[in-house]
Image 1 (cartoon, rainbow, N blue to C red):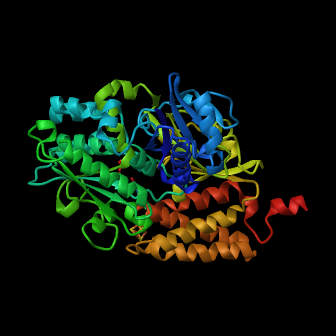
Image 2 (cartoon, rainbow, N blue to C red):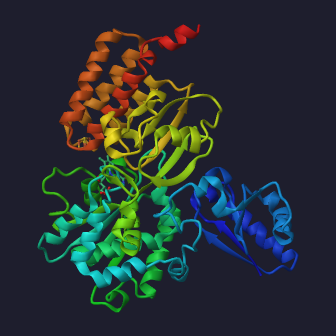
Image 3 (cartoon, rainbow, N blue to C red):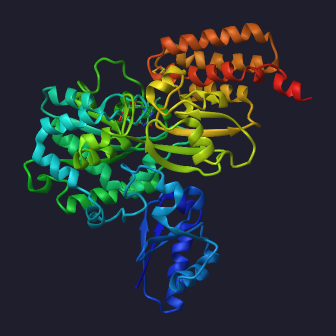
Length: 517
Ligand SMILES: Cc1cc2nc3c(=O)[nH]c(=O)nc-3n(C[C@H](O)[C@H](O)[C@H](O)COP(=O)(O)O)c2cc1C
Ligand code: SF4
């Protein structure tokens, strides 16, 4: 029996993984070969997708990127262990994968995401088993000791958030998983939901036990149909096997999860706006206080965390807080699943301990630009993140180091641009994004972003450039300090960083082009 693993990850499916799987089945049938095709998540080496793996005595042997036309010859090479141009060797030994520290993504691309048994065979649910023996106080102590900070953007300590909810008295409490993943260049939430959904369920269940909540919701953006299906199937399987329901693993703890689908607003990723949306209203930001930890969903104490924050929990509970905290630098402990995107040669998911520099990530891991032209700018942390020039590539991936340089890590997305980029256009895009996505609750963001677009347009047309740059800076200051939430507040980062690091692009004829003429 030949066992083949083919991703069903949306990124792999987009480049033909379903057709490749069908072709394997067809060729095998025509040759009367017995094969088993297991659909997995992606390993995150997207330039090699569809990457197909064969179960072999030395480990899983990978081939990629495989097209339908390659299937017959790849199957031959698999059967006869003969050479093939697409043979990549043992998957775990591929240098790009081997140099990572996969704690959260250790099973992604390996297990069958539809099978609880497959998850359990790879250490799944061991964290929950330990959590049940520890009880609330023990879990909270472990999560705090791990140093885990929220992976959704703000980097708030998860242990403190959970303890606040645990300490708040109420008849009902909720766990909410934020899977809105709206940041540009990010896909880690989607990948883990499609490739290892049980780790998210396990993390949420442990959170429920820790704070005394019996119900959880996963809020997934509607643009993620594959992830929605994967999570719904996994929830059903967990219920069937007693890992969700009235008695978790036969214990006195009850916990259940429901998937809710968003309707496509970036601001619905902001936690209070998300809660409004979950309650059936338009996604408008709520003023804080009260914090969601005190008064969240339906007015009850609520833990709201990013997908990756929950997905880090099973490792922390199973391997210990110390094992997690050993990785990282400064106050940024553990690993970060970094997403390399945009104009980059080797784009994909790279999980690594905090501390790696931006330059190592772009030049070394990412291999520079896809176009082969020099890298000019990178935006880290989504549409509200700063643009960094090459001079800042020595910045280590660490919350504080980025903040010191007026940047942010956000959800770990990096978007790369080559030297053909016009940074005044990027600044305009940031303002326009804010204007389009603004929930409208506060004036600096609702009105200021539109005035910002107009001002950048004037600068780009060469109208009173020096004065309009002052107006733009003033506007960014107002946005930064006068906005109710980070959508308006952080729009100043991409705009001001573009202005500061690439001043030559602002004006009717960018000075760097003048110099080239
Ligand atoms: C405009 C805006 C959009 C956001 N989008 C997301 C998102 O898509 N996913 C996410 O997890 N957090 C997002 N956040 C951060 C959340 O408000 C919140 O901090 C996070 O869900 C808390 O979880 P964590 O502590 O695990 O990071 C966004 C914040 C803002 C201001
Ligand atoms: S900053 Fe923008 S998105 Fe945030 S509350 Fe104000 S108007 Fe709404």
